[in-house]
Length: 204
Image 1 (cartoon, rainbow, N blue to C red):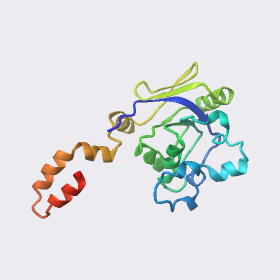
Image 2 (image 1 turned 180 degrees about the vertical axis):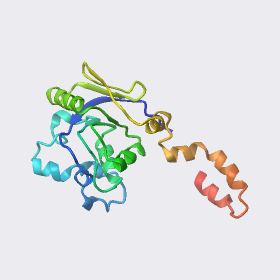
Image 3 (image 1 turned 30 degrees about the vertical axis):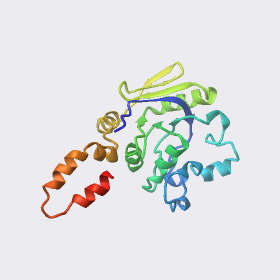
Image 4 (image 1 turned 45 degrees about the vertical axis):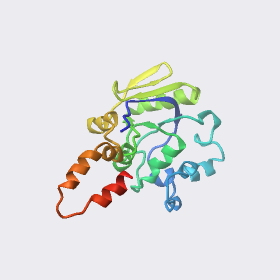
């Protein structure tokens, strides 16, 4: 299981409230069999309309991995493709004023922490990143601090999601793999199913 205690790198600002999941990844891309190509489609309609001026297209933000957003980010439909698209683009953590609840849960489920800060603090971070896109940035889930260059601020996240991320229990598949012997033992005591072939297939 992969523990998420600190994400370090560079930040990318995205200004605007109520940015919904259809803007993050339009519905026409939900037919994809895997999530692998969704990074290319993230914010595709907004980026096309902005004609190269969208922050996800600007060269100074390429390689950034910490997204800084405003209020109610990820609202709208409950598509898991939205955090997957952000992840495939390279985002590993999000700092914002507030997040839609289902979007937040979908992010935690793939190991992306979404931490909140006061609106003025978020705007200050966005201003700093506009002025210095190369500033180093980090989200520390143990200290509950965000650093951006010389600027430092406290952030918040629920204790339950924080523990899931820092202990690695956000990774449900990883938990299953790490508990394979317990699963075998439980399966061996189930009288109503023949597990031998199934366990061979799982372990193979």
